[in-house]
Image (cartoon, rainbow, N blue to C red; front, side, top):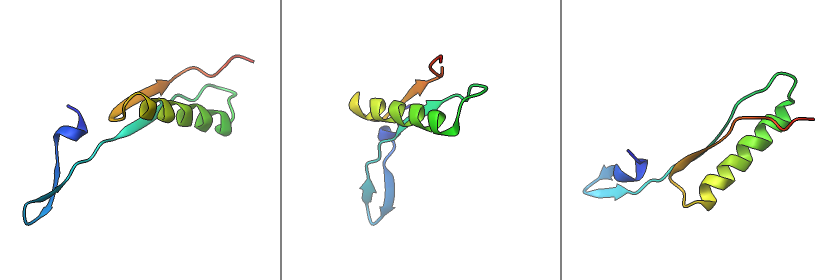
Length: 64
């Protein structure tokens, strides 16, 4: 279920509406940490551009 369907109650009937966007990447042997983080960041930006409240993946490192 999407996170947005579960408000966080903070007292006295007040609630926060929360969404979550996540970018996920998988480390490939020989890949630099910078490359891994860059792909995860690009996936996160893609999740935000597609409407937020979703997970976007970037599994494969580009081949050299």
